[in-house]
Length: 181
View: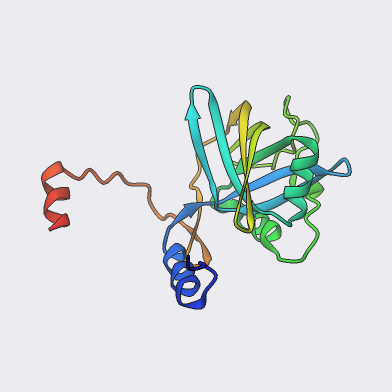
């Protein structure tokens, strides 16, 4: 069986995934009773009944270790006005203690809440799955708070982007079929 870490697969795979646009979130947890935040784009809903959320973190990160130890994490959906917060949480090799970015009173959340986020989801770990060099955390959603609508921050081609306009693209079934030819 061929390993995906071989350069002939790893490089093109990394390039392909860089073209997959994704929303940007900050995964929050507590490290020694202090708020900690790591910026990621690997986050998705798993189920609505029951409400489950998945985040994927590098297995050796401080965040992954803290979440494994505490059994809790939060997810802040970042708007484009929080690009500096996203950069803070994405800085490699830097401590990510996030006191200056988090609210003191977290409105019932047991995980740190990022001030000004589009939404906050508070989770208890239901399941963990080791996958390659990452750990997947599936969380039971215990609280979800949605704030004023703003434009989401997006990660694509290894950089942050803002959406200039939120538009709906309705594509008919016939157009979809024609594009597949």
